Image (tube, rainbow, N blue to C red):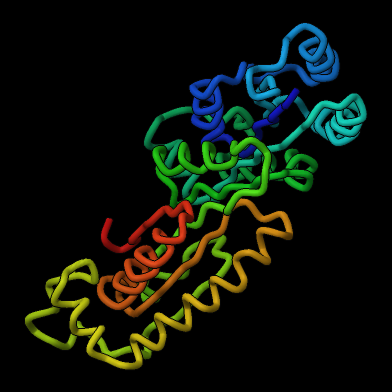
Length: 288
């Protein structure tokens, strides 16, 4: 039997992750009282036959409303379940505080930990502290600050591959340094040293996705060398990160404005890694 515990910050996508798991056949229970976790998992193991692939799957959503005392006990409960031959994985979803504040403002939802004496920002920080025991033991941790619903669904599905070694999904993100660094990137590469199409009047209104911009950069030997060096670096070190248990990688590539050089380089890497059969998510932050 496989048990997935889905947890994380309110507004970071826990409901989306649970619905995705339900869509692929998992029995999902949200906000289960932690006092029932051990008994439920053992009961399901005894009563549910394994599926055609030799597994049965249950997903349980756990959040900060369980309280610090019970959340601190979760790692011990998981150890007990694993001793009973139950494969337990923890999927933890997070996002930065400004993103979470924006999401709550847009949806007009109330954070479960807010109150008369606690602001939204304080509630988010308290929730981070309460959920730290789960984050520390997470099998997969996904930062959804710059991930939309569709991308999150793909990431969740990408982590359900029959529990054999799989290639980690990679988020390739272009950005502009003038607008700040992306959050939670595993690697950040700076391509501002390359020739800048911005200074070509006919190229300025275009982006790195347009053929004239690509041709301009491909005529520059240093741009081709940068592309080849990035490919060689990532081909060498992504597998090492995977072997260390990483299941989700974010790679940021930045130029000054995030519209030409960085966008082109992300698209060039996409073309290469698509041919290698690697799961890719593409985000051009400054293109919307």
